[in-house]
Length: 403
Image (cartoon, rainbow, N blue to C red):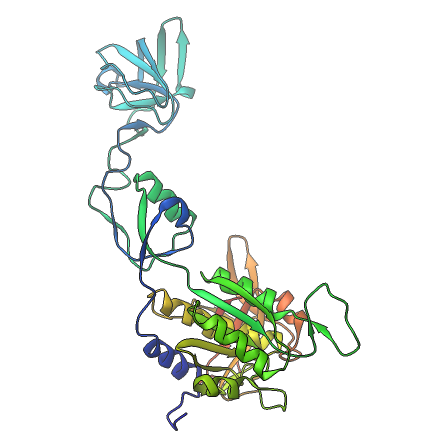
């Protein structure tokens, strides 16, 4: 490592963005399998939406010219049109068509009078339409015009995006495959839950937590299990995983204790690009590569590991997907004062304060240290305090990051 090694969170993120020069090559994937992936192409509408004029309400399709100035009319019911019918007849003067929501509007009709404003007597319908009321017709292209650029490359396909792509009739899309991440825990004290605990042992909480965080960020996670504190066993697992993954992540063994081997292990087989950031909690976070596969070293303390994964792990995944590694933060006022205990970036657990319909502030939670599982369980956000911020007064804006 050189003297220019990143020490601040800002510099570390900039380093990672420059380090991961190319994203994972895109592939064309069936739309049915593309949920959660990032688009590698702009989506241009090949058809308009709606594709045809259709009724927005149940009621009667009519010609506005048949309605008197007071909004009344008595018309013959010429046909009934349900959603999905492909052949409808033109509407003639003095005629109405009973129509269901989503059904084709017959040629000649320019308005749908809602069912509640009608009365049927035999084959006739009496209207009491509101003068100048809504036409209740969804017109062709009202939502989407043919040729519209609807989704840009870099957009993750969520439920709403999937619905739109399906409506356009697309069978496949060009996407970035999910980054393959191998996740390893180290530490002789760790036992996989629900195994039997001997005196001095604890359950490995980091792997299940980090695995879910990485999956939520878009990664495909391989669980490498627990390697203990044996440097050779750790190295063997990481070398084996490096050839088939886009990113390695370890938790534990990244500090300065006699059993903390990760930094030496990385240096033996690759390069340790940076280690120890001005970040609390999370100082012993490191980044490098093993056999040309990037590796992120996270602390063993659960809250510190979560901070590192949220701030840096997500950024690496974004780079692998071809996206800029910007933090998904928003700014909210704190509900009470916060005393700073660090001059660098400081991260605290927090909970959103809600009023009906929206979050109005963030409440800093009691923080008992980087090993606190209680803080993780109660928090729904992290407060990210920048090095430039001193003590925070109640009402002052801070960056807030979802957990």
